[in-house]
Image 1 (cartoon, rainbow, N blue to C red):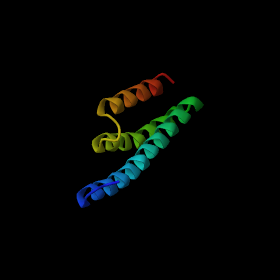
Image 2: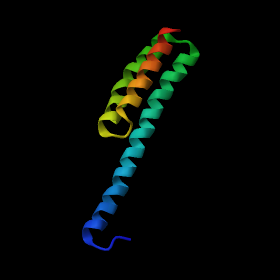
Image 3: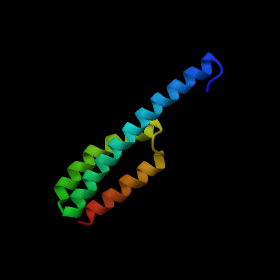
Image 4: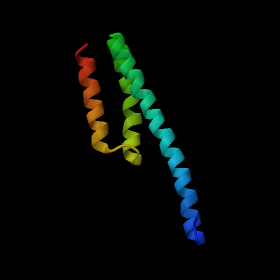
Length: 86
């Protein structure tokens, strides 16, 4: 438990930030799952549309520090390559 006011405040902020970050990460996973579902179905146009919707969400997560920038770049690159190979 926090022993002074500033530590208590940091603890409250930490809980709040963790909740926001968890929501953001969940949102990213949902968007990526939509792309992967379209790829698995073999629907190139749906996959492209899903990737176009997922890209800003992934970039936002990287900007906010929820996911590492290079991890996002790698994920987008791999998804794009999989869509091209359909």
